[in-house]
Every structure is written in structure tokens, then in C-alpha cells.
Length: 316
Ligand code: ZN
Image (cartoon, rainbow, N blue to C red):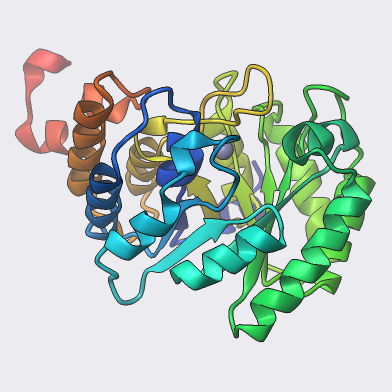
């Protein structure tokens, strides 16, 4: 790490919480609408400013997300919090707008095989859908964000060329995407690859903010987060308790865990605006709702700062 890269560490990182969607949609336990509403309201009370509430997909395909309309209707909207929803097509985008989503998120895969596996369309067909969705969302006066999945590797095709990732980013920006997220959907990235892709993105789109959606399927999630931080990335997705993954990609559990990310950032002196004990209480409540442990580590090990403040020498 060069001095320049140390200096580039952001002072503040914005977390978008994806647990209620990306987390719960991969859970075999389906929470009730009331439980989801409680979870999202607790998350909003931790200081989060962006929460992925749900997905407007076919209930037969993702039964965990069948009640997203009711969840939107039930949550207590906090001012300053952006409540987003995922939509795979125009019908979904229409439902998201009607339900009151602040932002509609569209997904596209950087590989043909993953896109077909995910939404049963070619990338060109998906882009045509995105164009229709963009027109609809913009006519409602709302922004849309785009997530490019498997941007760091595809479980079906292996390496994904950086040029293809950037070309698809260009297409999404041309369609009016407000914000771009690159997803390591199946946890295939490593720190040097993250930096290669981020540098290439910056070279091509110097003024465009970039969000990273990292997974820890092979344990590299926090290392990849640091790799992004070192290049000044200050927008990340993470999931409360570390639940979730991608149901349409084989072997893809392990979203970054929100409270683990926040703990690490705070230890490094990087602010998040989030209340870590409140996040941990939310993760414990989620464990009770799901009836099983969540993968997050900080709720098991405790907050380092509290241990230091206690000066407990028995733990040394
Ligand atoms: Zn994910």
C-alpha cells in the first residue's frame, strides 16, 4: 500500500443495507410481513440511510419476496432513508413505483450464462427491458440504480473481461442509471482484481460514483472491501447478520455482514453514521426471527472498543 493509497482511505463510508432483500430471499425460513416490517424499522433506527426493502419478482420464483407491497405499506418511513426495491422487468418496476419505492434497482449480469440463469433472457434482451423500465421510472420522477452482477467472475463462464464490464456500465449509464453497483455475486473476487476493476472503471468514468456489492463466499469479503477502500470507494452493500447470497448462482452464500463491516470501519477510524450496538441488537433479533444463528462474527466476539474500555486483562 503506497502513502497515496493510505491517504485515499475515505473518512466516511455509506452502507446500503441489503438484508431484507438479498439476505431474506436466500433464506429457507420465510418471515411474516410483520417480522419483515419490524426488521426494516429496526434497521432504519440504526442510522442506515439506504435499505433494500424487497423485490417485485414473480412469487412462484421467489416466494420469500411475495409480500413486498405489504412490507412497503407497513414500514414506518423515516425521513432521510432511501427505501429501494428490485425489479426484473417493467411489470416489477410498475409495482415498485406503486408501492412507493424511492429507487428502483435493475439487475444485469456481466455474463450471458448468469443472465440467462437469473432472468432467462440474453443480456441484449435485458438491456431492452432496462430501457423500458428507465422510461417508466423516470416518467414517475424517480431514479433507477443498476447492479451489474458477476462483475468479478462468473460461476458458469469463469473470468469476466473488464472491458465487457465497462462496456455494460456505459450502456447502463446511457440509459440514465443514477448509480452503478458492481457485484461480486458469487465471491470470486480477490483484492488485486477488485483494484484492477476499480482503476479501470475510474479511468473510463472519472466522475461516476461506484458502489461495490461484495460477497464472502470464500472468505475474501473484508479483504476485498479494504481493497476498494484503498482506492477511495465509499459506497458498499452489506447484509445484517451476513445472511443471504444469490439463489440463482451455485455455491454463492455470504453477503458481507453489516455489523462486521461497520465494526471494521469504526476500528479503522472511518465513520459510517451507524449505531453499532443497535445493529448488533438487530442481528440478534433477526436470529430469533429465523430460528438459527447468522454468519456474522461481531455478535459472537463482541465490540473491540468495549473490551478495551473495560480493560479486561483476562482476555489478553
Ligand atoms: Zn449479495
